[in-house]
Image: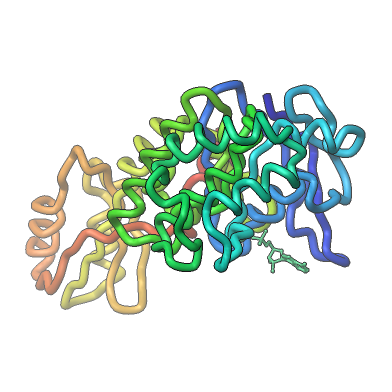
Length: 308
Ligand SMILES: Nc1ncnc2c1ncn2[C@@H]1O[C@H](COP(=O)(O)OP(=O)(O)O)[C@@H](O)[C@H]1O
Ligand SMILES: [Mg+2]
């Protein structure tokens, strides 16, 4: 459904998106995961024909984003990071306005608006001013405008950012419902988002793709690289060498005030590590599990790719 082919976007000499290729099949929900500045928004704006690429191309449902931007726009619904909402318009008036912009025939527009307000759970908000809605409801209106022309593909840029936890749950549920009949790409800079919403993940870092995997594999891999912080009293180098020989420990690195020890969660080695420290006649001051940062996850994934 979506084929991205060696796409590059440069701002001057700086490549915000650098030679990326990936594909999305019909009906998939693909998460575009990467830290801030990774190039997610830029890619989405190129795919939705808002921004010309420097090199490479992409096809949406077989239509090239350069050769057939009108056909592409017909098939894509786009929810930008900041949806183009007018605070002093009422929801229904706004959707009528969007329908006009998108060239939906008036009769068809009335029918579609009635449908999307049900789908997006805003039936009882249609007469409210957009500016009076909560952020969660504004996001629903944003989604309603994105799907108004009944596109096959929906592209959403950080659809849950800035929402409170309850709103996040509701909007994720809505995304899953909308995705049942459509192909979806959404971007996020947080890992749990892809775990909860997507079938597949494209991980992007500094404009390049570092991994493409199923959400299942990614989560499994994260379990394999759980990290513990260990602080001891004694010679840290000697302790590091001794801990590294424990069966099941995959990696030991020094930090300024202790050690990072990696092992898989299934084999809980905390007892073995503390026993080894005591054997050396040293004291175990602290041992705690640490969540890996996105940066480290990217590093781990990039290293894995290189090893394969
Ligand atoms: N109009 C622009 N001019 C110059 N640099 C830009 C412009 N837009 C984005 N960038 C840069 O491109 C990189 C990718 O940005 P963006 O696609 O917004 O990342 P993300 O959405 O993943 O946070 C960033 O380093 C950003 O500063
Ligand atoms: Mg962005």
